[in-house]
Length: 134
Image 1 (cartoon, rainbow, N blue to C red):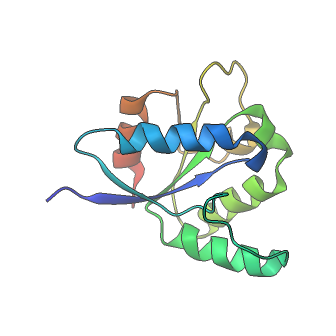
Image 2 (cartoon, helix red, strand yellow):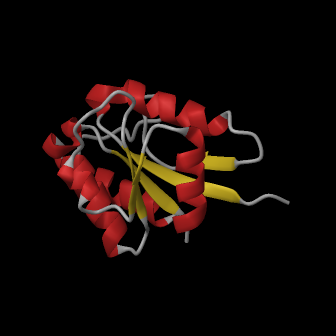
């Protein structure tokens, strides 16, 4: 039976299209089973309490085999993405940076924390997940 990978995607809520596109890319890949852990607008953590949100996100990150960090330059301005990636490192969850399609520049917040940076290509992303997943 094929392994199922638990993946947390660190993303910016202002660029939710990148998250949805990345999830679709991985779900459509044959012979690759993936479950997603991150919070999304479809499944938000309904609270304005930052500590509660952090506790819930920390649980999701710790339950993940790997964290994918969407490495658009906007990540450099997201305190939440930085916190999520640092939380992954603290909990020994490997990070793979994914460069959004068409991006020339990438965020150092993601690139400085990632084990590997890959392009927006299904096989590259899947191979990196398989390589680094705990």
